[in-house]
Length: 230
Ligand code: IPE
Ligand code: IPE
Ligand code: MG
Image (cartoon, rainbow, N blue to C red; front, top):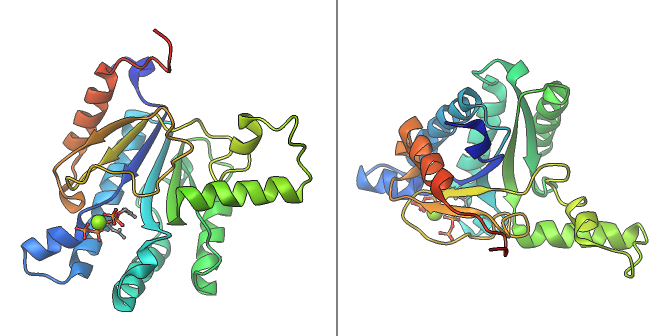
């Protein structure tokens, strides 16, 4: 595909792990384990395709409502992932976490900050993992920073606010993919997605394959983006 037709920034809502497990009469955690494998596959494929930036929605500010055992199992999976290291050449990717990491355990926070600093100077794809992320929280957090820094309401503009978001410096999201059949944004990148294209797919996240990513990008490449123009 012509590189100019590729999205510069893809957002992926990794949804459907619980239903994948339920269909197999397995505990929900089994779905999250399979989901982590799908994440690795998809990240690798994004690198192979030459995508510049991808954001994976892993845990929302609302997901704390889930049973404690499930939340703990998800946190353990993050931790295991960070221990195992990337099964891709670390040189190929800049890993960042977006969202409010404050409530995470100290051990997890340390692993996150180590991975971020180890990959910060790389030049490949920027991979954001959204953990305890909410679009509203992102905007609120940005506004608080602007106020603390004494921003002037007369001159404040959209670029200045964008620059305080967790995604500062990255392009707005062009394509949001949501598997699992749900057709909603669930508080993901709401500012950054103002002009995103959406592709909703019926596949459950643990089954999401390279072909599904290709199909979503293909669909995106056919859309006529007008941004309010004609
Ligand atoms: C997504 O899968 C993972 C997280 C939100 C952490 P779900 O756990 O939401 O799976 P379903 O939607 O119940 O199938
Ligand atoms: C969105 O999925 C959040 C993540 C995938 C991390 P949810 O399963 O939490 O979303 P809702 O509750 O169906 O909107
Ligand atoms: Mg869900």
